Image (cartoon, rainbow, N blue to C red):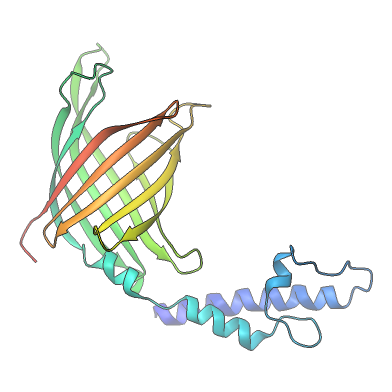
Length: 230
């Protein structure tokens, strides 16, 4: 079924592209394609129209799974984690610590990995005093064959936005590095860097760095341990 849906999607895209190309060919007043035009980069037949066979071949090739997708799937399973957060502006203040659980599951035939997270964290209550609140989050990870990058998104019950990030993997250090930008308040955009290190099949960690005024600071650290060794 995933293969059929992929084929239908690719066929739809291809059909729309060919219709647009046909309309262009019938319009004698249309300006010539230039090197900066996205359409100019597409495989073309002698008539100047995209070659459907070449386009379909390229799309099908880009839809295939590879070692990067398998790498993400290798982290499937149930995990316990401990988290440290440095929220106090005082550099000598101890971090806030809490615990939680997470489940990673491969979906859509191996193309993506979904992660559900549940935990507790202290947040200021209505009276200003720290109060334990339930935290829920959901992440989606994948490898984009077109961009040749790892891609991810994140949502949680502490906000209404969706965080998008792109990253790379270094096999020498067994670590992912993702970059993104957050906007916790209007106009307050903040670059973020995440480093996920895989110690072994049953342990990994995440370090979260925020850039404030050109200075990067680690504000969160999460250590994961798999429940039930792999």
